[in-house]
Length: 115
Image 1 (cartoon, helix red, strand yellow):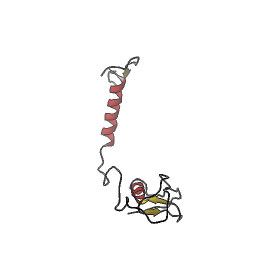
Image 2 (spheres, helix red, strand yellow):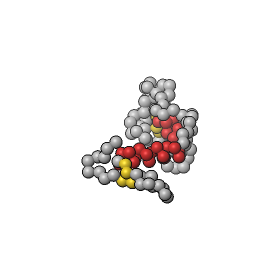
Image 3 (spheres, rainbow, N blue to C red):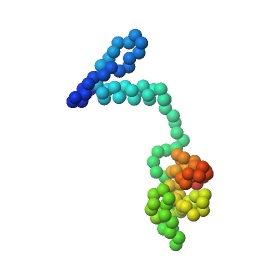
Image 4 (cartoon, rainbow, N blue to C red):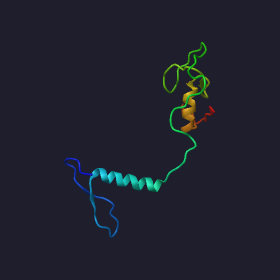
Protein backbone atom coordinates (compact mmCIF):
# COMPACT_ATOMS: atom_id res chain seq x y z
CA UNK A 1 0.00 0.00 0.00
CA UNK A 2 1.52 3.29 -1.04
CA UNK A 3 1.38 6.69 0.56
CA UNK A 4 -1.12 9.26 -0.47
CA UNK A 5 0.28 12.19 -2.32
CA UNK A 6 2.01 14.54 0.11
CA UNK A 7 1.74 12.11 3.06
CA UNK A 8 4.83 11.27 5.05
CA UNK A 9 5.69 7.76 6.21
CA UNK A 10 5.55 7.33 9.97
CA UNK A 11 6.89 4.92 12.52
CA UNK A 12 4.35 2.42 13.80
CA UNK A 13 4.41 -0.26 16.47
CA UNK A 14 7.48 0.87 18.41
CA UNK A 15 8.15 -1.07 21.55
CA UNK A 16 11.23 -1.15 23.70
CA UNK A 17 14.04 -2.74 21.72
CA UNK A 18 12.00 -2.90 18.50
CA UNK A 19 13.24 -1.56 15.20
CA UNK A 20 11.29 1.38 13.77
CA UNK A 21 9.15 0.40 10.81
CA UNK A 22 7.88 2.89 8.24
CA UNK A 23 4.45 2.27 6.80
CA UNK A 24 1.94 4.33 4.89
CA UNK A 25 -0.88 6.10 6.67
CA UNK A 26 -3.56 3.69 5.43
CA UNK A 27 -1.52 0.63 6.42
CA UNK A 28 -0.93 2.16 9.85
CA UNK A 29 -4.67 2.55 10.36
CA UNK A 30 -5.22 -1.03 9.23
CA UNK A 31 -2.64 -2.32 11.73
CA UNK A 32 -4.11 -0.23 14.55
CA UNK A 33 -7.61 -1.50 13.73
CA UNK A 34 -6.40 -5.12 13.65
CA UNK A 35 -4.73 -4.71 17.07
CA UNK A 36 -7.87 -3.11 18.49
CA UNK A 37 -10.12 -5.91 17.17
CA UNK A 38 -7.79 -8.58 18.58
CA UNK A 39 -7.88 -6.92 22.02
CA UNK A 40 -11.63 -6.36 22.00
CA UNK A 41 -12.49 -9.86 20.90
CA UNK A 42 -15.84 -10.78 19.44
CA UNK A 43 -19.16 -10.95 21.20
CA UNK A 44 -22.19 -12.92 20.08
CA UNK A 45 -25.33 -10.83 20.39
CA UNK A 46 -28.81 -12.11 21.07
CA UNK A 47 -30.24 -9.42 18.79
CA UNK A 48 -29.94 -9.08 15.06
CA UNK A 49 -29.06 -5.77 13.42
CA UNK A 50 -31.66 -4.01 11.32
CA UNK A 51 -35.05 -2.50 11.78
CA UNK A 52 -37.95 -4.27 13.48
CA UNK A 53 -41.48 -4.33 12.19
CA UNK A 54 -44.33 -5.61 14.31
CA UNK A 55 -47.51 -7.13 12.96
CA UNK A 56 -50.01 -4.49 11.91
CA UNK A 57 -47.52 -1.66 11.65
CA UNK A 58 -48.58 -0.89 8.08
CA UNK A 59 -52.29 -0.98 8.78
CA UNK A 60 -54.15 2.27 9.24
CA UNK A 61 -54.58 3.38 12.84
CA UNK A 62 -57.85 4.43 14.41
CA UNK A 63 -59.21 7.96 14.17
CA UNK A 64 -56.80 9.46 16.72
CA UNK A 65 -53.77 10.85 14.94
CA UNK A 66 -50.53 10.65 16.91
CA UNK A 67 -47.16 12.07 15.88
CA UNK A 68 -44.04 10.15 16.85
CA UNK A 69 -41.79 11.87 19.37
CA UNK A 70 -38.72 10.31 17.70
CA UNK A 71 -39.35 10.64 13.97
CA UNK A 72 -41.88 13.52 14.02
CA UNK A 73 -44.04 11.62 11.53
CA UNK A 74 -47.63 10.40 11.80
CA UNK A 75 -47.80 7.02 13.51
CA UNK A 76 -49.22 4.34 11.27
CA UNK A 77 -50.33 1.22 13.11
CA UNK A 78 -50.07 0.66 16.86
CA UNK A 79 -48.69 3.45 19.05
CA UNK A 80 -46.63 3.05 22.21
CA UNK A 81 -47.35 5.71 24.83
CA UNK A 82 -44.50 6.89 27.02
CA UNK A 83 -44.65 7.47 30.76
CA UNK A 84 -46.25 10.93 30.58
CA UNK A 85 -49.37 9.36 29.01
CA UNK A 86 -49.56 11.72 26.04
CA UNK A 87 -46.25 11.37 24.18
CA UNK A 88 -46.25 8.49 21.72
CA UNK A 89 -43.87 6.65 19.41
CA UNK A 90 -44.70 3.88 17.00
CA UNK A 91 -44.47 0.35 18.33
CA UNK A 92 -41.73 -0.36 15.77
CA UNK A 93 -39.69 2.57 17.09
CA UNK A 94 -40.30 1.48 20.69
CA UNK A 95 -39.04 -2.04 19.95
CA UNK A 96 -35.91 -0.76 18.18
CA UNK A 97 -35.26 1.83 20.92
CA UNK A 98 -35.62 -0.72 23.72
CA UNK A 99 -33.18 -3.10 22.01
CA UNK A 100 -30.36 -0.59 22.45
CA UNK A 101 -31.55 1.63 25.32
CA UNK A 102 -33.91 0.50 28.11
CA UNK A 103 -34.66 4.08 29.20
CA UNK A 104 -37.38 6.36 27.90
CA UNK A 105 -36.52 8.74 25.06
CA UNK A 106 -38.05 11.53 27.18
CA UNK A 107 -34.96 11.48 29.40
CA UNK A 108 -36.89 10.91 32.64
CA UNK A 109 -34.83 7.84 33.69
CA UNK A 110 -37.99 5.71 33.42
CA UNK A 111 -37.61 2.33 31.76
CA UNK A 112 -39.73 1.27 28.82
CA UNK A 113 -40.75 -2.29 27.98
CA UNK A 114 -42.60 -2.63 24.68
CA UNK A 115 -41.96 -6.38 24.43
